[in-house]
Image (cartoon, rainbow, N blue to C red; front, side, top):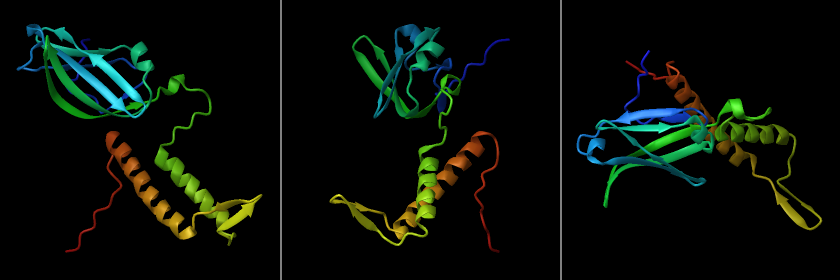
Length: 185
């Protein structure tokens, strides 16, 4: 059975997976010597991908071994073509590299930053319910707590972010978003 190769850049990939897509660029055919390149970049590093010719199309193919070395995270990508001394930027976008769970050690925390932060804020709020002091001093070092009012503001902010992540995951899995739209007639 022939593999159906996507013609668009993926929104996410899993480190350790084989990754393939094909681009047809009428103005920059691979058969005429144009090479399609991608640069993925974030604060932690960069990833360069060089396409190969498949007739006049550009085939982007990353082996499982190569992607296994990619650090998980959100990246910005840019696509550009080159031919001898010419270079033209074609597009840019965002991609998420997800960790390879099969390669992770036991006890790996799969929660997002927003979920971890919300859990930590709620733990502090619950632990502080009986505490009335906002600062204390030990051996001359002053320690301060974040006031409950500020923690509540942060909690609300992260609840919204977690809800947004949950809705995005639902939509990605073909389910309906849990956002309610209320209409008054």
